[in-house]
Each structure stands twice: as C-alpha cells, then as structure tokens.
Length: 176
Image (cartoon, rainbow, N blue to C red):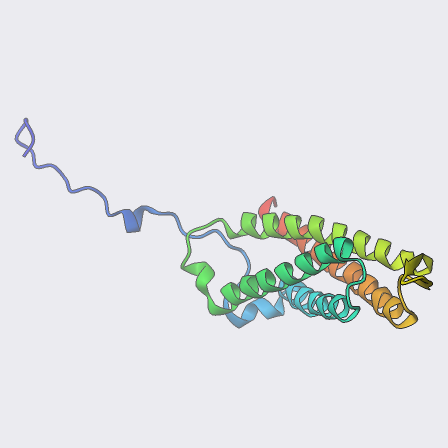
C-alpha cells in the first residue's frame, strides 16, 4: 500500500513491453519468393564460386588475394546465416529492426566486395609481370592461373552487383 492507502500496481512485465520486430520481408520459405531472397541465394552461390576459384588459383599474390578470400568466405557464411534466420522464422522472435540490419549488412558487404573485386582484377592484370624465380624469369601467373583469376574476377563483379541490388532493395524497405 502507498502512503495514500491505494495499492501500488505491479511493475509491467518487461517481456510484454518490447515492441514487435520490424521486418517487412516474409519469414519462412516465402522469403525465397521475393527478389531479396533470390538475390541472397545468388550472393551465396556466386560468392562460393569466387571462394573456390581464388583458392584453386594457388593464390600467387597472397596480399591481394588474401583479402578476396577473407571477404568471400566471411560474406558466404554471413549470407547463409542471414538466409537461415529468415527461413527458420527466427526474425519474428528476435526484437530488432530487421529492415535496418538488412540495409547495414548489405551496405558493409557491398563495400568490402567491391574492394575485393578491384583487388582480384588488379591481381589478374599482373599476368604479364615477370618475376625472377631461381635465376629463371617466369610470368607471375601461368595461363591456367590467369584463366582462373579472370573467372574469379567476373564472378566477384557479379557477386558485387547482387549485393548492390540487395542494398537498393534493403534501402527501399528501410526508408520507404
């Protein structure tokens, strides 16, 4: 009882006072029927190809291609996690502004992947650079490595474009 004699109401239940998660994308398998879901699937597929191609080129320039590997592997797993959260329906259980998180994630990965694309293109352009290895002058990249790096550059550009499209869609959802 309070000083005036009226009973004190119990404090509100904190679990009930949180606002609902803010997400405009559908949860569950319906996410795959949206453009955003299709782009995330393409990001995973193309990003995995970039990862495989760079790894199979024997990474002749570790300083440049190490960053490409880091970005492609990290983006691959985070995109899988992102898609998994939507497919499982967990986004409806976690209180967050998913529209903003979608935008922030795709902006960050777009910037990193654009840099990775430029570095992979730079590594590929060094095909004709000759280096001295054990008293014989050889090209930095063999013809096979050059072809693999060209493919990796093309797929890195396509992956960057997919992240850019996802970024535009996320921006439209976050700021209608």
